[in-house]
Image (cartoon, rainbow, N blue to C red):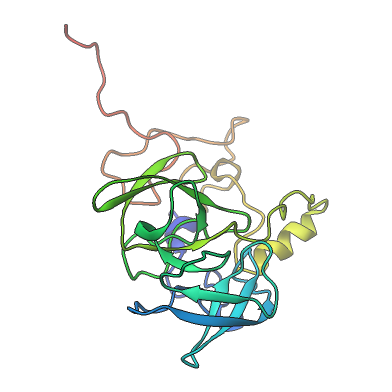
Length: 238
């Protein structure tokens, strides 16, 4: 009898894969949409185990306090603006249609008002490359370009924390605690190295430990792994 593999077990209610969000500092999202620009003051910079980049605690003029993904060069006492401003400084939140071409940005919204979806990891940044009537073309870190609505918001600058992967982990224990901070499973074991009871690809009946076969065409997510069935077979008729 088989066993549900890891990708199927996630989200089934067990705490093994749940993120320890009660230990996070909070959500680092754009403020709700407003018409007028609001100025805020950076009162602290904190580290959150749920984010690879540091977070800036910002107190705005309307007494609202929110977390901002901190850009490079920001410090306690600096001011940031949410909305259109004459001077765009690192950390300011501006709509894409109001950002000049060639500007580097991060924490970009996919849909206006969603709080930010792209370029949120440490050291990440994108670039505004072109504009049309209602769309803005953004070059993502993968060099892929994406057209977004002009009312989508983004932060000016480069996200802080670049170089965090330059330092080697050195030991498996360090990798374990790095994964444990976000409740990720470590170490990762291939399905072919498991027993037959633990994974569809696992058995120990031969020197070739795995028994990977082509996944069924209508296999559910989690089962459709390894060798995915071809769309068609046979010779192509000319």
